Length: 309
Image (cartoon, rainbow, N blue to C red; front, side):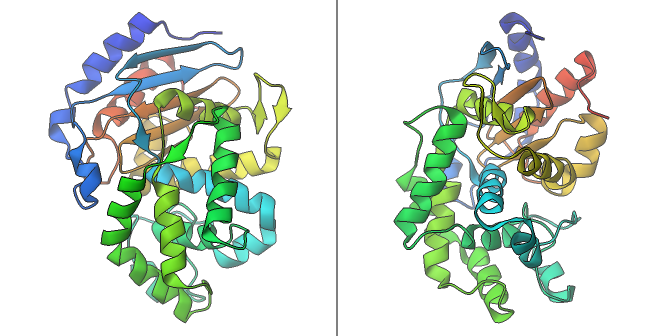
């Protein structure tokens, strides 16, 4: 059920790469600053098991904020809808992903949605387990199942780099602790969250995960329901409304594919019923999204009418 050929994809990657020079890698996490800003790769995985790809597809990158979608799916399965959304909201925000401003004006002071850092920290705090190792292990095993790859792990160097510089995320934690939205020890949560963000994989792994969400929680290769249909629906809805930080509205209009980005340059796309998409392009725009990755998705959506709207 291939929409694209490898050759077509290569052409689009070369076209999109031209804008990479206008972006910057995420230097505020020192380890991410070492990436080559001109890299760009894409993999598209179809329900019949076939895939197409182009660019530096063997390069691994860390999920960063893409992990927020997956941790949300896990805690919805762990805790249930009511428990989760008593503690984190469902509304998009026009503020940057790491902003504390809305927390100060909301009553109760719960984060607006699970895709901003404050909301993601609350979601991660809900992952069940008696230790950081057990909780991270449960999340990793879930991701390995989604990606159909038992070798997926986290980067210790990126996790340490994030942990050592995560001052703003610590501030968010302390604010949320003050209002009893988070109850656990801040440093324990920061260790788990930074390791979650540092889980790394290739574009093809990411495309496989995107495919499971696209197929309403079913792994079409194994013919197995991995997550409940309604959990997949909720996650895809957040990807549309909040997945591309404070550029989500513009992205919905110009591209119209449920997607989630991360500051390492990854983008996961889930085209409902059709395919999963994994992109890596570490040069970011001023919103924190992969500048070449956004361009690539815009080109594909425009030329192949991929928008769900």
